[in-house]
Structure formats: C-alpha cells, structure tokens
Image (cartoon, rainbow, N blue to C red; front, top):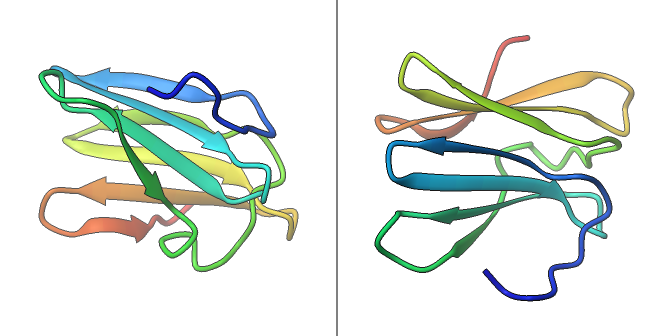
Length: 96
C-alpha cells in the first residue's frame, strides 16, 4: 500500500482467505477500496459507481457473509446504504 493515502474517515477492513480488503471515505467523500490478493501488491478500486454516486458522510463498516463482501455506510442523504460484492455479479447495491 502507498505510504500516504488521503482519507477523510476511519477505515474498515477484513481478510477473506488470503485476500485483504480496506475501505475508507476519501477526501472527496466517495468510498474507496484497497485490496491485496495475498501474493500480489495492493490495488485500488473506486466504489462511487457502485454506490450510484451517493457520497459517504460517515465511516464505513465492512464484513463478509455467505461468500459475499459487504460495506455499509451513511450517505450524505442521511440514509444507510449497503454495497455488496459477489463473484457472479461484482459490486451491486444491497437491500438494507
């Protein structure tokens, strides 16, 4: 991972097998993901498209369940939002 990553909130993280995942709210308020597949270097992903353009207003939380990865955050609209990832679908909006 790079030494200096601009973040506007505390990160959330989990490990899934050998993979490591870190999520944070960027200084532009959108969610960012960093992941490392164990044997490789860190990669960056932007979740603003998956979040359908809803900026985050608080710290994210992240967890895995039933083979899916999930990130929950409070949007600037005051509502809770959930993003999910499954191998068969990629990122999609969950149903909180």
